Image (tube, rainbow, N blue to C red; front, side, top):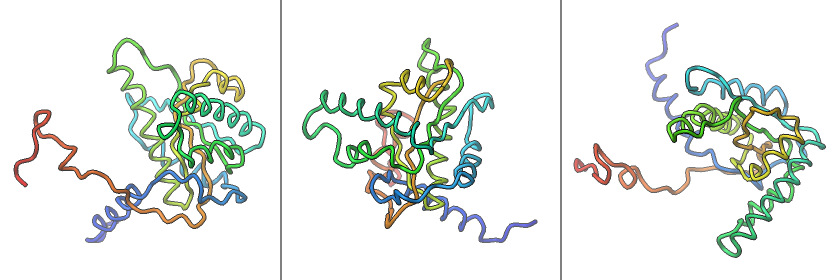
Length: 216
């Protein structure tokens, strides 16, 4: 079937809008409305289209939507936040929105823990980057797919301070590495828009570090 002439621009616009407006949503969530398992699985089907080294597909997704496992992970998350707050008191510590998320993490409709089979090799930075580079793109794709369906999420890794205890509480076997945790819920009056970021001209070098694009 032939694509219409305007397919590419329209598609690019919709993709760029989703990418540009996928923000962490911590407050404006419908805390009472469950996120359907079929919706989560549909988003994971999008996520697993992400690039993965050697086509290994080592990613695994642990979805928590029952009270007991959510409460267990939430307790570890709050312990980690308390440790972080003690190390960085005052303005440099956790922001109110982050603390609010921690305080009600177990009431979030679902928590998605993105994992990878295996462990990051410690021999070289290249090997570590290759390991995480084969799973984190899927986590980001999952976040964008959720956003496109009106489901808010937050990218957080704080619970990894207690990764071993989380593994024990959730039955995660040895040889599986936990990465990103995404607390998710249907958005309620959340108006997402592109964030104010430094433009490409300020963060991009050409052919050599520090060399700006002189064609502007």
